[in-house]
Amino acid sequence: MRHSPGVVPRGSETILLMDTDPETRKLAAFRLGKQGYTVLEARNRAEAFAMFDGRAGDVQLLLLEAKGRGWELAEEVTQYHPHIPVLFMCDGSAKGAQFVVEQGLPFLRKPFTMCKIAWKVREVLDSRIGRPMTAGASF
View 1 (cartoon, helix red, strand yellow):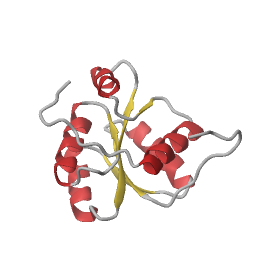
View 2 (cartoon, rainbow, N blue to C red):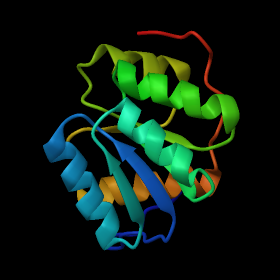
View 3 (spheres, rainbow, N blue to C red):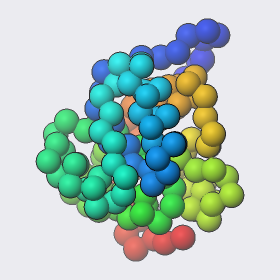
């Protein structure tokens, strides 16, 4: 997807965002909300799974931290919804980040700007990347 200078893409989809770091979670939710997305915020895997379970038909993207719990949630959800797009967030030093990169999965490096998160979310939604996760994979 080509990025136009000064343009930040918008959307209207619903995103389930899970990150255990409250600052990252709030910042991502704020930035995506400003671009028109509905963001469901979860502090942990259990909370995110319960939210998804209650609104599975509404969620068009999982935006998850690339640590063990994010990967676990992606595996759980994609068992029943194998084509839902998943975008992982990682700080580059995490063990999970290496695994996400090795698997060729979409990821967003932390920290991110408004433009970076907006463009990456739009790219993943537009390409509808939703390849099934490999069961039993671990970091």
